[in-house]
Image (cartoon, rainbow, N blue to C red; front, side):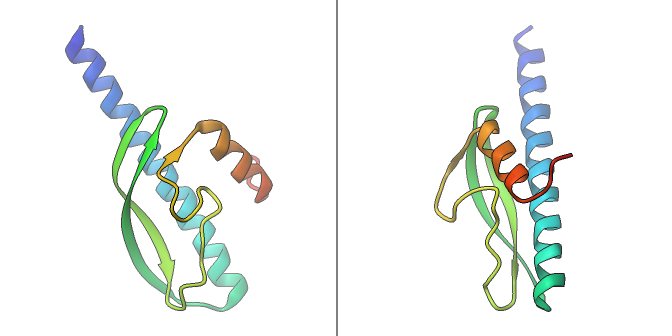
Length: 95
């Protein structure tokens, strides 16, 4: 039973990580389109969520350094699902 808990926990963390990366990439793409910018890869950071510690989160950036995600604040290292929902809703991503 303990192995099942570990497996489920890992699946949830991986899903949260992939979802966050997808949301942030979409957010950057919209920013680039509106501001006529250029993509410039990603940087890695850690984030603690109520679903566990997410290691190696890839956060996209733009060449000029103007893109800042609305999902979390620049130096914030923890995120609650409620914060994520509010950030998405306030940015017009309600689905």
